[in-house]
Amino acid sequence: MSGKSTPASAGQNPSARGEASRDKWSSQTAFILAAVGSAVGLGNIWRFPGEAYDNGGGAFMIPYLIALITAGIPILFLDHAIGHRFRGSSPLALRRAARGGEAVGWWHVAVCFIIGLYYTVIIAWALSYFFFSFNLSYADDPGGFFSNEFLQAGEPGFSVDFVPGVLLPLAAIWLVTIVVLALGVSKGVEKLNVVAIPLLMVTFTALVVRALFLDGAADGLDALFSPDFAALADPAVWIAAYGQIFFSLSIAYGIMITYASYRKRRSNVTGPALVVAFSNSSFELLAGIGVFSTIGFLAAQQGVAVADVDGLTGITLSFVTFPAVIAQMPGGALFGALFFGSLLLAGLTSLVSVLQVVLSAIQEKFGLNPRRTALWICIPMALVSMVGFGTTTGLYLLDTLDQWSNQLGIVAGAFLMVVVVLWTGRRGQELARHLSAVSTMRVGRIWLATTSLVAVLLMYMFADKVITLVSEGYGGYPDWYIAVFGWGTLAFIVVAALVMPAIPWAQGKQDFEAWPTRAQLGLETAGHATGNAHSDRQGGVS
Amino acid sequence: MSADAIVLMVITLTVVWGGLIVAILALRARPEREDMPEGGNDDEADGQGAVHGGEHE
Image 1 (cartoon, each protein chain N blue to C red):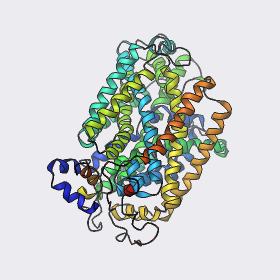
Image 2: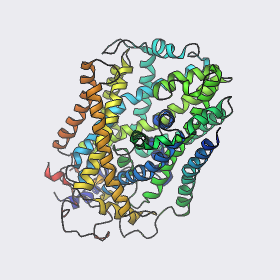
Image 3: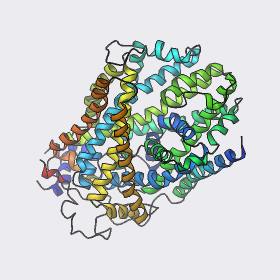
Image 4: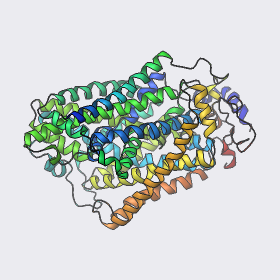
């Protein structure tokens, strides 16, 4: 079958034609809101403030800004370029981009699958805590309430003692997510973001303004921004800055490739990407100000220095430290509702983007429609998620999966993508010219050089983490637990990346023509990329 | 707050929030390129269409 004839033959069949037209964002603004919704997540609220404080305070802002310019924005452009030019989910777009690309794409999908399983649970906790805020159930003993009353956490291991208080909100979050995803990109994901992101901005700004007027807020900000310039000589501080930019921007694990693939071909790519990158950093800076104003208040109430307050990041910050502050604050119930409402909105919009990576890939691989894919994939995922995290051992599983899927899975998926597309696939110039041909901001050799070099840093981060996890273990968990749920997670990702490319694509051999064509970009059509460059290589498999 | 903390805060906010404002204004002033190459309108032929088209053939 000639691929060239496919659109025409699809057009002869009305139902086929209906499915044939790829879903699209309804406007540039809608796309930006969705991409911001994906980038702005829990990491912006609970990771950035603590990372900045631990790594030189005000001085951290220098490596942070350098990392944004030299890694965050370049990799974001690469994601957008791959998705927009090669028009597909991560496996399909990367397959079209370079040899070995499909395996990297499925690596991204497997990472997103794992993250989707546990990210849902944190959002479910935020939902519960949103309601707990109205009567301040957590106020008396926030730490004890979280571990004992709410999670009913047992010993690390695997238990099937379900905790109804966690299970029910978890089911509710899965239900909402499945409905949004089943509606598709423009009718579901876009509509969620168009409502949720402006609402998040209003909610979170109200929270930060309130926090700024608390007693002790200035001391908190002083602690966050006081520079320790000696920290700049410590390579670990620079790694922390690159890590923060990398993890908070939702880059290089398939999300932005997938989202960019739903843009029209004739779209400005770099302009909106810049808005997304600066929105993400603007939001986390706002979060830093809000969180440290609040911590300053807590320190003042306890009569201690800000440096003596514990629990400044992650789950502890959100579900133990913040409840402790809320308990002591006049009008705490409203503040609590604003905080947990913000977590809920920021988390939900990121969750749908993570799951969209999985759904788009499966949808394209097996030729399914969005609704069927959402049901077939998300309902089993919801069940696994409820069994894994709706029990007394959910917290430990979450902690372990998060460590391996993020610190190893995301980081490796990122450098593998750069290696396959730029180092060995040599698509750099084509992608640079693609971006420059359609976008208002052009890119060139500097972009290509920085993007290619970031992979070296990512490889170092990966190797360093592997050594640490192998030699020191993690979180004091038993060895068998780390082997099964930590390294097992990585093994799952590796197997998915190796096995999935062997399964034939649903549609058989198809040609794919990138636009602008290589000729339009002033590139030779002969050479390494000839033929395969323009054809979707599924013919080689199926 | 100490003077150097204030300086660092102001600089960071200026760069990041200023960057956001500049990026938004630039996009509002020029949302799209007017001189894109020819073509690119046929989104049904963008390969995704081909994926689903194949299912029915």
